[in-house]
Length: 306
Image (cartoon, rainbow, N blue to C red):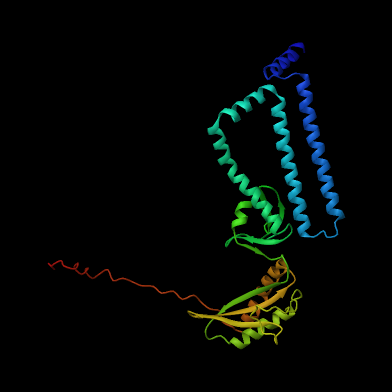
């Protein structure tokens, strides 16, 4: 027992620490934890007592809460380094005499600083909020914004997977926000039919199935839409291409997730109606070119024939 305590004392002495320094470190950790908890409860109480508790308030609350937590960890680490004599002298040596190291650290922190500034801009200008359904980038996955902190934003996808994306990347990407003002969604439902298909019957079957779906809502008065105001469900022939025509149906739902589910339901229902009424689908056209390898190759240009 005495040998163990003596070994611990030698280790503490080699680090330049004594009981007073250890108590100071414990006090720093406890103080940082208490300050973080007090600020956290203050932010939480302010959020609950605010008149509006929408997605914008939740976004600010999450960002500042995560920011305070990160700041307290950094301050506690700096205070501990300053408290331990050996670490303090080592830190002074690095930061005072190593100019190259400072440049390296500056370059390494450039990305982190960019993420922090982008996070502040996201909270200030609100391209999206916690709880919004967004798509980041041209080929990004749709998901719900779950959290935002100083470095990154967490998006929960439909597959229940969390995408952790740095704030600087989100600041540069094209964001498709399905919830920022109005969650009502116009779903495009398309079918490729053969050129000789009965277009009018196909349109009538599509309209009938859409009107029967329980999640369909009445089309709102939207200016930038291709719908016909006099029709409850608009179906248009949007494309005539090689061997096929494309019919597009415009159906509205209360939110993007409901619209996606309705899309899948109508795919199955309209398919059954088309098969029952002999509406032909388009078949892909393939062209094959067969080369005749039995004939000799012609002589190259400028080369005399043998």
